[in-house]
Each structure stands twice: as C-alpha cells, then as structure tokens.
Image (cartoon, rainbow, N blue to C red):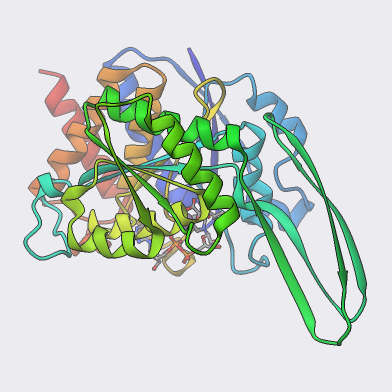
Length: 378
Ligand code: NAD
Ligand code: IPM
Ligand code: MN
C-alpha cells in the first residue's frame, strides 16, 4: 500500500487534482494497486483562515509517506510569494527534492505552434536544479540606513550563514537577493542528468547558464559540469547561455536530448518548453529526491483567471500522476495512463479549451478513464 499526501491547493488546483486522482484510482483498480490518500487543506483559503502555510507537523507526517501529489498554489488575495515560498518551495527544500524533472514531449494530436515540427522533433528532458540558486530566499530591502542582515541557508548538504552589511549614503531604496550554488548541490543534479541520458540512451547533455555575466555562481556550475562529464565519455556535451537556448528551443528543438539547468533559468525555459509541446495544460514536473519523498505536479500555476469554471486542462496533472506511479515502481500502470492520454489527445473528440476544444475538465478526466479501461480490460 502507498500512502500519498494530496495537496490540491488553490485556483484550478482542486479541479485538476480531482481528475488526476480519479485516473490514478481507475489505474489502481486495473493493476491492483492500493493507495491511501491523505489530503491536506494547505493553500490560500486555509492561510487566510488560520495563518498557517505548511506546518512542521504536516511535514513530519509526510516524511513517512511514499509521495506527494500537488495541484498548484497562488491566489490574488495573498501577496505574491507567501504561498509559493511558504508551501511549494518549503516542501521542495524540506524534502531536499533536488531534481525538478520536466519532460518536454509533443503528443500526437496536439498542434505544435512551431511550423513544420513533428512529434519526433519535440521529445527531451529538462533537469532543473531545485534547491539553490536565486531561490534560496536570501535577500532584503531597505533605505537610508546602515543595514546588517544575518541570513542562513539550511540544507541537508550544508549550512551557510551569510552576513551582509550595507552602508547607504543616500536616501534611495535598495533591494538585493543572493543566489547561491554549492559544488555538491551542482554535482548531484548534473550527475542525475548524465545518468538519465545513459539510462535512456540519449547522446547529448546540454548545460544552461549565464556564465558570461554571473561569473561566480555559473563559473562554478560550468566547472562542475566539465568535471562530471568526464565520467561519461560516450555522451556529447555543450554549454548554452540561457538567452540563446530560448532561441534554440524554437529554432531546433529536435537538437535537445537532456538539458540541465540551474533553478531560475529552469523555471523560465520550461514554460517555453511547455508551449512548444502544446501549452501549460500538458507539461509535467517531478520534484524528485531519489532517496526521499518526491512530489509530482503540473508545472503550471493556479490559473486564477479560469478557476472554478471547470475548463482547466487536467492532462498535465494526470500525466504527473503517471510520473508518480512510475517513480513508485508501478511502471505498467504509469505507461497505461500515458497511453490512455495519448489516445484521448490523438482522437481529439474530447479536448479542453486551451487546446482549441470545448470539453470540460471533468469530461477530459472521464475520457482518460474510459480509454484506460478500454485499452486494459478486454
Ligand atoms: P499559471 O500557470 O497559473 O497561468 C498562466 C496561463 O496559463 C493562464 O492564462 C492560465 O489560465 C493558463 N493555464 C495554466 N494552467 C492551465 C490549465 N491546466 N489549463 C488551461 N489553461 C491553463 O501562471 P500565472 O498566471 O503566472 O500564475 C498564477 C498563480 O499561480 C500565481 O500566484 C503564481 O505564483 C502561481 N504559480 C504556482 C505554481 C505552482 O503551484 N506550482 C506554478 C506557477 C505559478
Ligand atoms: C514552477 C513555479 C514555481 C517555481 C513558483 C510558484 C515558486 O513557477 O513550479 O515552475 O518558480 O519553481
Ligand atoms: Mn514556473
């Protein structure tokens, strides 16, 4: 039996998680998998009522579970960053989910916005570092004074105490944010990218950075990439600056196999990646700690503009569920869900609004379940 923490969150989160759970339960019946869901209320509503984000008591409970299935957080009533940092990033850091695996795959039946590109042209992995970089939450803002901040980054790999001194001689306001990467933190994510390439028999790993400007942190990133790559002589390597890679994603997506990137650039380039695979409604992310509790989610947000209208596309969340089952070792069930999704998308009879159709969220979930049963129960 698997114990799975369920955090639907805000906006379209509950709508899409409902469909994802429905599909996982249907697959569980077919493949005799036993799942115990433990649902948590964390998100905007809970925060506004109680002031609580993601409490340590819940984190301690989840520590003994098998995985987390996550919808999305973010709400116009709450200042940007509170829910995102207090819930999503807190979970990523607490469980040391140092890999954010984001496959970019164009499915049959989806219109690619790039002219002339076929399904075989868009099929690669982005491996995003998920615990460091400008995401560590170290920064401040102030004006017209001497300011001394004592800040910390507490990680499984290291503890960094940071002290910054500003002596402002003028009135103007200042804000700063520190980016930090570590050698071991970089080594483990780059190694994961090469191991993934090896496992999938992919012959190129591309590193993303901005080492021409942010020379310290991405200088270290490059050095580590070079070091790690020497252990994989059969795999070709290259460096791309982040600005250039956005251009290449559009111009020659077929070139890419495995792309490994620091945290913030990974966030940005995977929304672009999502668009070339048909939109945010399709794109999946796994926050993975190979030795700990991992968390699976769509890469999109809470989409407040379409919340509670039953028009959100649940496919990304359903595919995140498949990724979770695969990670748990339920490979047949995972594959079956992906096959069912592929069938629904390629037939195109039931299609959500973002993909140019007029089907409702629930109808898409139901259709995936129908196909799942049709393919697997003869
Ligand atoms: P978003 O991803 O929520 O939405 C961007 C656009 O894509 C919107 O027009 C939305 O309607 C559309 N969209 C997203 N998912 C869709 C789906 N499944 N089906 C159909 N259309 C979909 O990004 P945003 O608008 O920049 O952010 C909204 C909120 O979500 C913010 O509070 C942000 O911080 C938060 N956010 C959370 C996560 C997360 O929890 N993982 C990720 C990104 C953004
Ligand atoms: C994502 C999101 C998050 C990120 C935010 C909401 C913290 O944009 O998962 O891509 O930046 O990682
Ligand atoms: Mn993002």
